Length: 325
Image 1 (cartoon, rainbow, N blue to C red):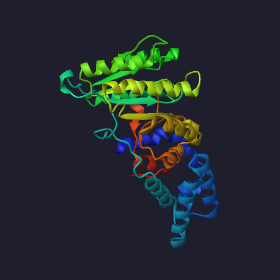
Image 2 (cartoon, rainbow, N blue to C red; image 1 turned 30 degrees about the vertical axis):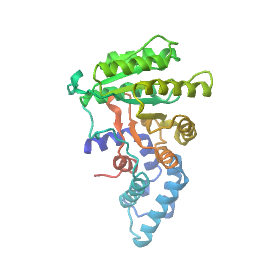
Image 3 (cartoon, rainbow, N blue to C red; image 1 turned 90 degrees about the vertical axis):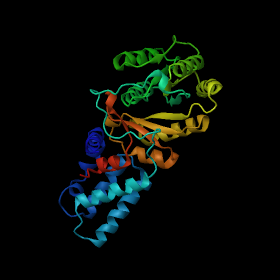
Image 4 (spheres, rainbow, N blue to C red; image 1 turned 135 degrees about the vertical axis):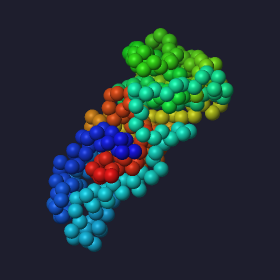
């Protein structure tokens, strides 16, 4: 787990800097004082932790300070991390078997033979607006599952955006992924239908569906998503078993309203938060979870395939507050 914590700290470097650089006394060796608490409050708001979480963190640090006037930076940081761990209890989303540790791209596992899975593939529908990293995340997720020995098929169903199908094909060639695609403008539901049949025939464990991120109007987009769902359910009434919204973490709390719209229309089952390495607003994860109570399955901590990591509450809380093991 040490390696994963190190990766979280690197991925959240800008968020840590947004807090740590403004709280010299808090993260140093000096006792806590009113000035450092005020600076911490400002830093937490800057990192997009929100009013409720910021208040809880400050109140617990103040309560500890009343009991121990010699409270130092690392002790206060540990209190902040503990608050985050409590607030995010239950936030870790997991597929059938938990994913632990950092995947080493240099040592891929052997995929299961096509005959190993006689049941229907588990369908993961990746949903989100253009620019959220949905297509890239779909490819990274497929690669990650393959490293664990799972059989995976990718469905290129974002047929409305010309670059999306080609983008997925490029990732497919780079990471040796199996992709079912058609031409730009093709019926995305038909692509999903064909992809499910292919995944089933080849005995794949997972079918990952990269859906459209934009159509002419919001109602068009929601209808397109509903059509994909109806077509998949002709094969399997329980599909898609997972409906994950891919959220751009750099948008911070602004992404909450976007998530609510998709949740109301499509019934989300989880979240993937991307682009966290490029923002100082990593605290938005907390606000998103508090508002929606949807599990967070993966987070994006960089551009490489192995930078898509399973969300860990413990590592996230420790990384953000600079708590050492």
